[in-house]
Image 1 (cartoon, rainbow, N blue to C red):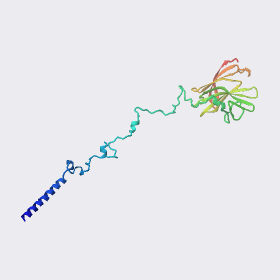
Image 2 (cartoon, rainbow, N blue to C red):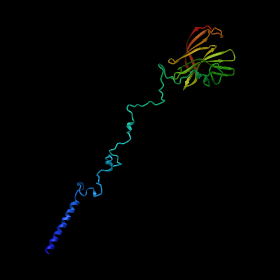
Image 3 (tube, rainbow, N blue to C red):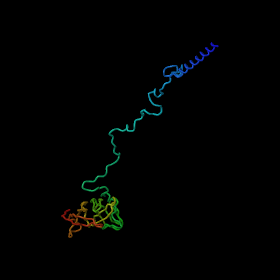
Image 4 (cartoon, rainbow, N blue to C red):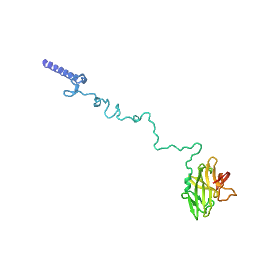
Length: 261
């Protein structure tokens, strides 16, 4: 009986010792390189690094943190010191001539060659009644020929900023008469409109016409004769100064010099 109890007690102690040993083994840290390190035989040790860490990214894949963009920034495309180029095709604004206004839109002597001369509110002396408009400087009807002469002056004589035109006109009738006159065309937005007239008489050809915009005066040189001279000759070279008082051109004064053909 005593022997049996002795073996029973030893068995109990042996079991207790085995239990304690098993518990010690199960509690050992795998990093200590013990039996639990590496997860058991045949398995590699677990790594604490992620795939991105081993590739040098250092962060989780897909988040993009800590990585430089492959595209350059918007500012990197700008060149230092660049300036804005002028708009192609843009022209500088109009300039004014020294001592005068902007001459853009001034009438030209060539415009008068196809301008109106006479209408219901304006009549040229010695011309037939009705509307008269030049075609290439000439009008003809009822045996009468009306011709624009080459003597012409451009400038402001009506008092507005636009330059007007003053020119000579000749009317040829069926007889021997050759009647000359002066006409002022007002500048109406670039269109010549007959506005003032003065008759110089029979066979009194115009030599020259000049216009002074600052004084609004027209200086006209033409040939004429004295009161006692026959109509078939000219003996005087007259220089007359006119101003416009619509519908007339008013002579302010004149000076005469002897003329010999």
